[in-house]
Image 1 (cartoon, rainbow, N blue to C red):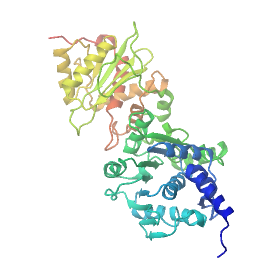
Image 2: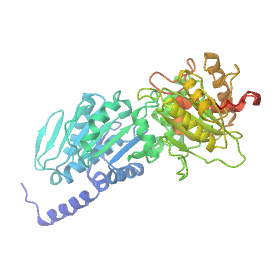
Image 3: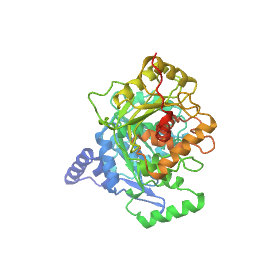
Length: 477
């Protein structure tokens, strides 16, 4: 073997330090990825959006990535894992995917191991200690392990990678098992394209909360255009193909979203409310931080009441136990239909009644239309006996709105008119998603999903259309 000169050793040392300092430098100069189109390994030259995402991975512990397809993000995350294993030993990387064979594929010669094999010899560890389908261990003490989503909770990890997380059926179970493995200071990356058949999945909840800076996660959204080779003509071709094949743009928004709103939206086929109408009235807005706002858990305020303006409150009561739906209320400004206040949580009927009373009073004595179901009766009785809230009566001249099949159909008919005409404004993303998910046949959310926020919003809209003569005050005992 030809001896390595001291000058070469020095240059290797300089390069080693540069790579240890920057995962971007490491990936961009020394890593290779397999190009399925060219059917060969090629240098991993990072695109602009990939580089931005990598920087966030380096700086933040908890990353949730919502992405379009074929953007090389799985390669990016595995490259970051390899950087940790080489330059920050002793690193433990846990890789999870939907199925065991998929996790093994990510670890093996086709992905992580293949990237390692193509590094220069001077950069590699002295030897590979273990190399099986589920474990890849280097002599420097770093190890990567592959698991299906049902295992892996007994380790302490430097980095946990959950690939295509929104396609995993048991997301909550996986999070409960795996999240503690990095609580000692490790990192976790959730990455996935959206499954728009599950608008209320744990992955989507984590991403939405991250956007609002509520949960410590850093959100990253990567649209179809993040890949430089894609232009508008390419996108229009995908759009035309999907529309003609499926009759809707659901698959386009799932596979190649332009915005995270598209990516997170529910499927539109057979839905009662057009996503096009809903998206046209949606104005994304983070809740305001109002010092004098009532201290109610789950309260979101988008605009404080203004003198002289009238407001309307829609309320959907629930049982209030840990397994029940949320109780939800929405307050709209009467003229513009703008959502100014939203509240959702698991409140007992009496507690929910108290919250209605407090918020109705705050918003200039807002009139309230309450769903008259089993728990709605209890809320209406509480309001009658304990508050001065003006409760709106239904056509049957009884307090609240009786949600029979006819009543529910009428409510959504009126809501559809408001969305189509653009005579309302939605600010809550959670409300938007629920509105998008309402089935046309049942006028309810899909099985396993919730519609409480959608109901309270539509009740507030309905209150705008009821004749003034039906707005009768509930007698105060």
